[in-house]
Image (cartoon, rainbow, N blue to C red; front, side, top):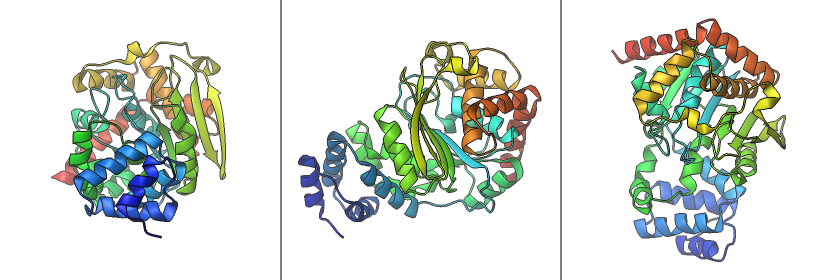
Length: 343
């Protein structure tokens, strides 16, 4: 079923939903650059104002996946993405990026999909580069990196070339649009499992149900009630979990895991170099709240990846992976392999 751009805009103005097949058609037109910048901007703004529905988001993500440069991973058992929508404004160090090395060292495989900074001083791509990782690999090289090291970093602009058609509009608008919540739903390696952080509590239920429609296997969507798009140590965290086809929502608290509460100020950084220093300290065995927040998030990802039987089990595995030196070794292995592949 097709819809004209004008009809789609009228729907958003009237706060009515654009149905699945219509959204597929509309999104394909947007991604192929068939709409004028004015019409694209109007529709994106209209969707934001009326609030995007689960159906609209899942349809748009389906189209973004269609247009992406995919990474073909032969064995997707225990394959997980750990990603945030960004936009939380917290300026924390790269918690999810640090967690990647811990997850891989504990038996998970990570297809990490990320880009430059959105809300922080250092995005996952900035952090990986600061650590010495070559992020400009082709899909075949990334698949090899996942097979050999257990980690593949997919730099988002390399995998979503059609986004160039909307990039100028997004930049000029300067406000969040549906694309800010699509990135984490469009892993180019098709990771069946995910730990996703979101910037607003309403997105927990929306994103986990979008993942359900998109065929995810085990997903945890989290929102720290202090505003963090990670599992927080400063407040309780709202969790939407998809497992065995069923969604349930609940809250967790750092003290449930014997971890002391601490505010997000403890994790703030001003630039990628500060983030790197904090991240290296954790991997080298430094104790403290930064280690705790990484282990808790890595533990949740290990649970999502079906390596651990619970978040608590994952937390213990994450701590062991750091204490043994295995997590630091994963970083060194990734740097060596990505440099070798680029040579």
